[in-house]
Length: 288
Image 1 (spheres, rainbow, N blue to C red):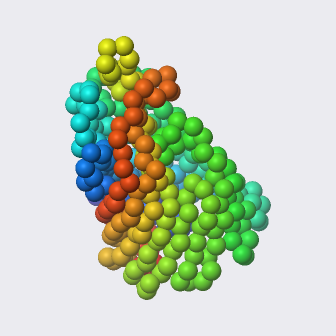
Image 2: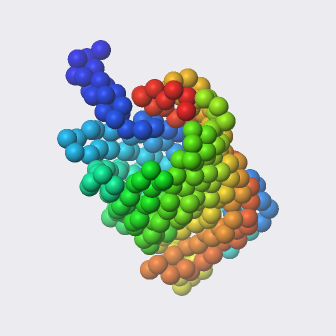
Image 3: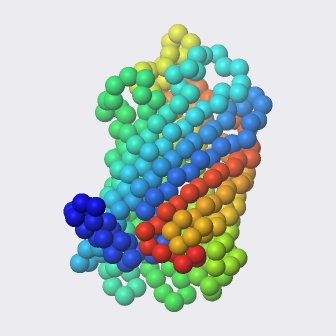
């Protein structure tokens, strides 16, 4: 092994050891089940994270690639061939530090390219996501207060972060609030289950504007929904985890936009979904 590569990997391992449950690599697929006369959604995502311990705080670098497939299982009045697939490439630079014994904050900035890529990349394909969250910790739990702008939630508007999390014991913990609520139950040393409620979606550019009828065009697509489900996670060994997802997706809305105004809305229905996730952590997770 090249010496520089060895030193780099050693640095990652040592700094990752300072973080808790830090996922170096993850890959997942997720799909809504077929529903007649309704738009379906499938997506696949790969995410790579590298932590770096600083003198004060933790710096994280992340790269994400995601692809969304739209199943137009319904009769439409337009040609949907150019809007059947959207790709997202996102780099995230994050930072976390403690302000004092009880307060800390974390922030990130995420330049994102999101498009159907029917032509070359332009500035219309580029979005800037980010978040700022203040955290107050105590023996009873933690309070998170902040703001997030994330097109991965299916919106181009900021969303408030207000949540309370608590680890009751080694078996049970929870987080209540918005945009994500979840309850976690450790079945044993290798298996755990999460019950959650969260937003899901995407917001993307149409690189070649789509003509609707003869007098309107669409520049962007927006898909947003809410998912509630259960995630079952199994620790294969000290480094690999495999998770299964299943649940119900509702309040789905998929539309075409021009100047942020809806010009066409597709038919969507509530539906069940399934997913599979594989994670790798350089830090031994001890099957928890």
